[in-house]
Length: 152
Ligand code: SF4
Image (tube, rainbow, N blue to C red; front, side, top):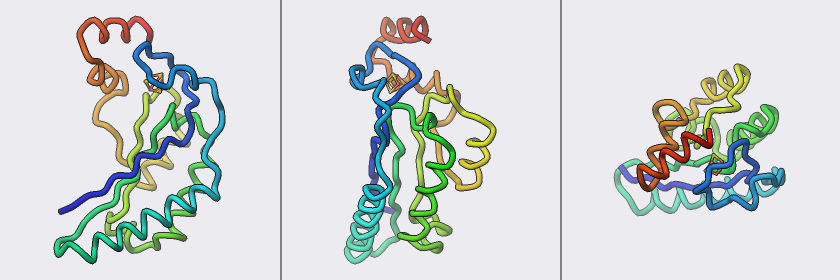
C-alpha cells in the first residue's frame, strides 16, 4: 500500500518552550491557517490522491498531519469546521474507508474532554504513548532529553 503525507503547520502557537524547538521565535504567534487556505490544501491533496490512484494498482492512503506549534490550542469549533470541509471536499466514502486520515502531532498538554471526544469521533491518529515520551523520543541526545524534562 502506498501513502502520501501532507504536513500542515496550522499555527506556530505553542504552550511549551522546548529548547531544541526550531519554531522558537514564532511560538507566541497566534496566526492560523484560514478556512479558504484549508479548502485549497484539501482540494490539492484530493487531486494528488486521484493522480496516485491512476498510477498504482494497489490501494493507497493520504495522511494529513496536523502540525504546529501545538494544534490542540486551537478551539474545538475550528477543528469542527475543518472536519466539515474535509467531508465536503473528500466525500464521506474515502473517509469511511480510511483512504484519507487525520494524524495529530501534539504535546497533549492542552487536551480537553471536548477535544478528546472530537478526536475520537473523527478517528484522528496520534503518536502512541504520552506526549512527553514523544518529546524525549525526538531529542537528539540524552543531554537534550534531560533538558527537555527540566523544561517541562
Ligand atoms: S511542543 Fe513542539 S512546537 Fe512546542 S515548543 Fe516544543 S517542539 Fe516546539
